[in-house]
Amino acid sequence: MVPIFASFSLLLISALFIVADCGSIGVNYGRIANNLPSATKVVELLKSQALNRVKVYDTDPAVLHALSGSGIKVTVDLPNEQLFAAAKSTSFANSWVQRNVAAYYPHTEIEAIAVGNEVFVDPRNTTKFLVPAMKNIHQALVKSNLHSDIKISSPIALSALQNSYPSSAGSFRPELIEPVFKPMLNFLRQTGSFLMVNAYPFFAYESNTDVISLDYALFRENPGVVDAGNGLRYFSLFDAQVDAVFAAMSALKYDDIRLVVTETGWPSKGDENEIGASAENAAAYNGNLVRRILTGGGTPLRPKADLTVYLFALFNENNKVGPTSERNYGLFYPTEEKVYDIPFTVEGLKNYHDRRSPVAGNQPVNGGKGGVSKSTTGNTWCVANGEAGKEKLQAALDFACGEGGADCHSIQPGATCYDPNTLEAHASFAFNSYYQKNGRHMGTCYFGGAAYVVTQPPKYGDCEFPTGY
Image (cartoon, rainbow, N blue to C red; front, side, top):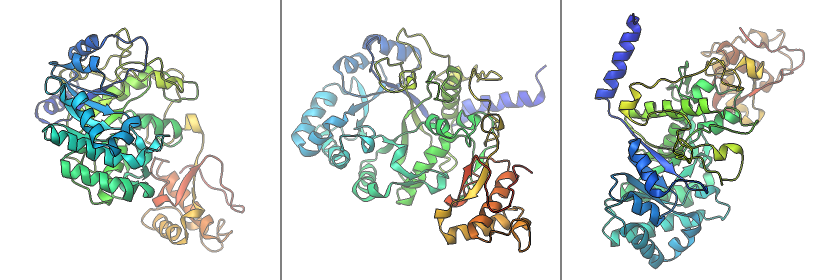
């Protein structure tokens, strides 16, 4: 017999599939490999999986011809190395659009052009050419009367953000705002386009396993993390990253611009130090992401913003350089066999379950409480950031000892932790009390940047900092 609550859950899930507005799932088709199937076979693979959106990193004729008449919507790319020419020469832009877009459209359903990719981290220093290149390519589309059907944008990495945590504090790097972001966002607004963003929760998790739970990173059940800036509760790192970008745009008064996640994924294999890289975690991340997107609903900050998301990537690419993970983001092996089995459609989701083992291989066991796992990191403490400034530290200390409910008796005059009588020492004790009382959950040691987590016991005079309540 199915328990009553389980029956209700099943009905609720079924209802979501029927009535909810939903986003869209696409896939990145990278080809840095020497063993991939032909473009014709790849198109058949996409169709067999009901993947109706694909993003490519160039304008290879064999690929664009193979996609002709397939019904698959395509995003093509003008490579970073061509940004200078596109920015400096309208004739180059016109010729590029004629050869690589107009020659195939509409039989190949090109819907967008990515002008460059993660340009701000390009070692060729092409940032200053980005917006002029976008404008020239757009004018070339206008000349061919394609500007209403094909949008132009440029994928940014999250490293373009100065702040991404908490999400409400999201902001772009100051040196990029005036020369790049404001003119680019103006261009996107004027042309009715969207901002392209590459978001990888894997990188954040891998670098911060002491404060980010695996369940939070993989869309699994968790208590959530409350954004101290706006009170919104987040249940996935992906949503938090996306909302950091929305907040950054909002800070510049561009609330009306849509966002498309042009890359996101999780590696199925990695080097020994690449914590979390495994087939089980990759299946969980991508499978749960597909469910998250296709069952509708936006993010906590933009609840009506149904997202289009492109999974990275279609294949494992054996010629990519870097750590092992770089060659193992694929959903499929070059043989067209699935690396792991996840659905890509609403219909497929009806029978999908996130299959997790009690302990995922040799990966750390995570506490699953949205915070720190005792089994992987031992004890942690929260201390004041002395560089935050007196005003910020004092305001945070007042909050912690007031409505925050921290136990501040020990830092009163004559008490055990009153000495040393400094703002940083007292704030550290109060912040740690708040952090420990709240279960060391992610987000409870931030205080607007006035605090951070440490893994060694803080030492202020003879004061002992507790590790739990």
